Length: 403
Image (cartoon, rainbow, N blue to C red):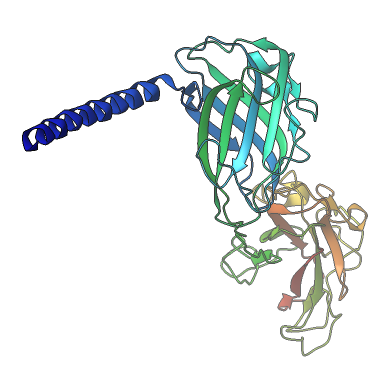
């Protein structure tokens, strides 16, 4: 009996082993035969998304690029884009603030396969634009071709609202218009930035300089006589220059003017304030005029035959007996100015002078200007009866910008 019992034990143990073996093999075969869940046919490559503006909550354009797999046997009817917190297929959670609502498919800006026949999805097919998804369809189906670059442009997509937020754009293609018949898939990592304001202030600027040698050097005096002793000879005209430069960013330009006074050192023996007057000897003022005046050599105002004046334009040189080098120049550089005072200071070979009153010379009103250089020409002539002495006048140039 004991031997029979042992035989039975060995028999059933072997049988159990065979059953276990066949169950294991069956499980393996079944695992091989049962179809797995259908994921993407293949992953798209060379995928990228150019976002027109990365600022949080910006409404912008998404230009989505990808290349189809090397084998693409089935026509595509549906392309879906999703903005998600994950790049994993089949997983898409809302990214705060992001939405495709209001998005618009730009067929004309997309690649050739999408320029005609495709339209934005609706509730009757792949769905209307939502906070996470946007799709376009072509019910006829289009073969996108193998290893072919594709581009789809969607306007007015709203970015996530969180600064420096990482998020993902998923691309999925389907063989049917209702997001079924999965073909290809790919995901793209994107990120919002932070809008940085780069700021600076530009102050109102008026760079106005005056000099007797040029615009930046020479404080005078401006000697209108000749020789080392600065002498005016009866009947012979002579003169000198000064320079005024204006540079401003004023939106309505500037006004150049002058005022003639004896403010520097009033003449002890009188004379007219602002005239070219004798400060050492008999009180006497040189003749002048507030209008453009041409003087003939040796025949200034009676009875003394002297005169004094200024202009700010080019002269012919050697006029009325002056030196051939005393020609002057028109304003140069910057915006061409408009002359004032009825042309009193802007008429070639004519000169004017005003006493102790702000007198406008020229202006520019069109806006900011680069440096404009003025050259003022002073001309003087003594007459045969002009009292001897030391003559002087002080001139202050004024420049006012208008913003």
